[in-house]
Image 1 (cartoon, one colour):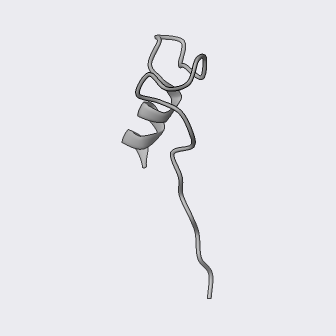
Image 2 (cartoon, rainbow, N blue to C red):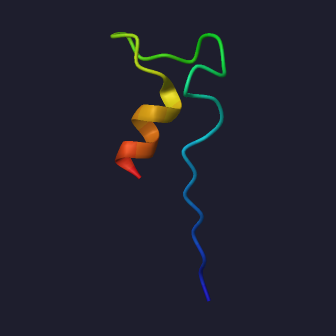
Length: 35
């Protein structure tokens, strides 16, 4: 059996300094939309 875990990562929602896309969106917020 193969199991795949997908996670948006850490941070986001104003909790982690840095970790932003070039337009200023937090990495977690972007990844969460994609997932």
